[in-house]
Length: 315
Image 1 (cartoon, rainbow, N blue to C red):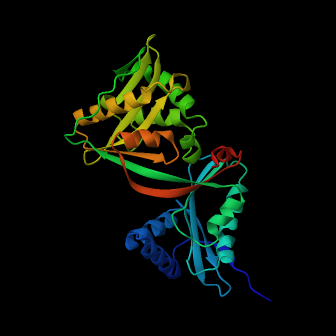
Image 2: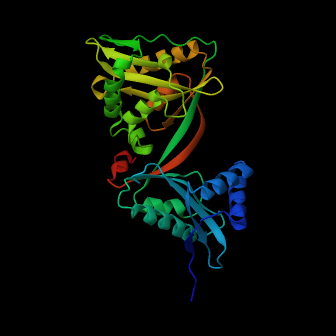
Image 3: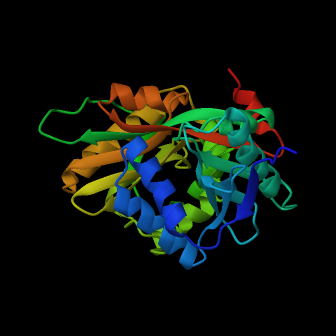
């Protein structure tokens, strides 16, 4: 009788697991020692759950690891889903199906996000069979050197103003409305975008919030309708945390005006490099391209929502 591949829980990284991760790191150009140490330490501290794929001879041929993004177990990120390039597609599919079934059976789960940067035979076709879609997401970067920035005025009836604490609650509502159902919310879910912005201002996150690089768009009645939020990180770098315009005030150039003013504010604060994460199919990607951002790191992400919202973006 033919022995089929099996998947078993993995509680620590043994010598066989380290060898497999070494092969993965070399094949993908990753730092070998760092890759092994990250997985080994995360497993030892209980920050990751993991399984191993074993072939007919019980040799380890694949690994998967994931972490929950919230206490309610509604969102999970699969940080590794890897099968050796030499395995058959059928063998790799065993790992893909197992991981999907294990996670989707959690009753509270709403979304699976899987980093799909390894060309693992059969694994990703298994995810496709279950309705996941693949998106490319890039880290964009722009250096703020001496080259003049474009001059972009806000559209008639709007003005861009510095941050004021009085705008906080209203802007959280604007951000929630702006991201509801958009592509970024599907690919990298802004499950609690308002809460995230609140925590950023309160100093609860690693990034340093800066009022000087948070700008607000208001209408003629003085009501906030959009913002650009840029945090400060180490080494004179900044990160675009959020660019949001309320749906009722879009398609007038307000987002472009906010972004240009944000770049100017960064330069005034001594920020030399600004980064942003964006999905290639997001219209915001074109705005960043036009403003001189370059893609420095791109990778695929597989997304599955239980309610099927990813299907709205099927090409």
